Image (tube, helix red, strand yellow):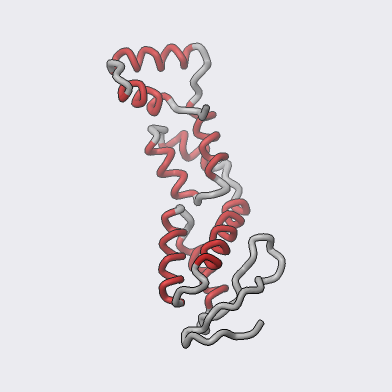
Length: 164
């Protein structure tokens, strides 16, 4: 069972057919009894999503779930910048491997789109792409485990493969 904030829980109860006043009363009762804690629920979301998504995506999710901007900002302050960088690196490597047969322009566009949808900062994505794609458009595919740069050949723009 995942943690929910008061607004999200009230909305959920209303969608299940409870009257708005009854839903609000139930939420207030849970809060009085100590069963509902918005800051703790927001931190839980950040912990669950932090390894897969960037700060912007998590912030959108928190606000969409009805957490206040203050509570969202407090929860987001717990994100480890190095953890976000590691998540970006893992996803970037996976996207590069999955798009190895695509043209460099298509791969670049798809990678950019996927990473921005996941909420990673544009500057970090751009730096990652500059470091990896370069001008030649042919590189070894990075490995998730961080050892070496991979062993699969990636075609050049003219369709030829280069030996490692």
